[in-house]
Image 1: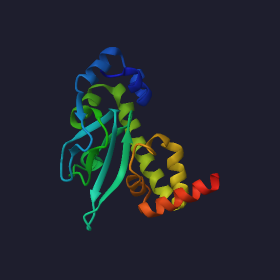
Image 2: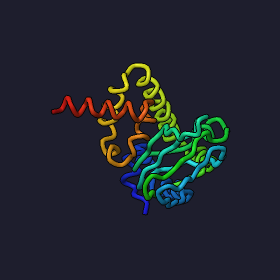
Image 3: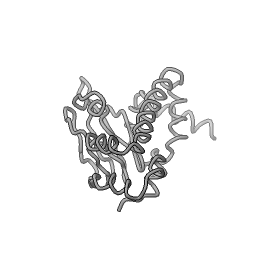
Image 4: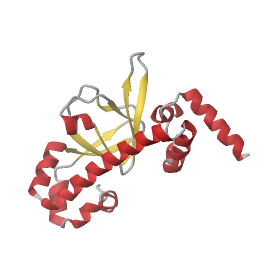
Length: 196
């Protein structure tokens, strides 16, 4: 069941739409269930989908030249996830997308979404909202890597995503922060020592 209230909270532009407009939007949405470990989008894929997480936890990752999995994003309830390479540059995904928990996704094909937006000018606000969120998130992450020490990046992560600290293996958090798991362990020990 799609929770309209949660969608309205996550996407404020939907409040401007009539019930008929929302129905037109939602009839193009499919529900996808995932088990922990399921990969629903692989490196090289060109599935042109946008995913909204109603329940669960997703990571995107790539495999480096040493064969190691490097997590670059973590997403959870009421967040969007997509392969930006596919959506914006019409290129194959560089990342794998994997469920870390039992997860439910709302899925809409991005081309269908673009067609819906073109037919309903009220939804153009949504397109701008989505694009600005992606740009803001990307620039903030870049600024954090330049301006913040690894410890400050971890403290910011703790503050912004406290629920993930017990849901996500620390090696994935370390990847997202751009540090090694050993460095993260040292940072956590320093923080714990200061709290005593």
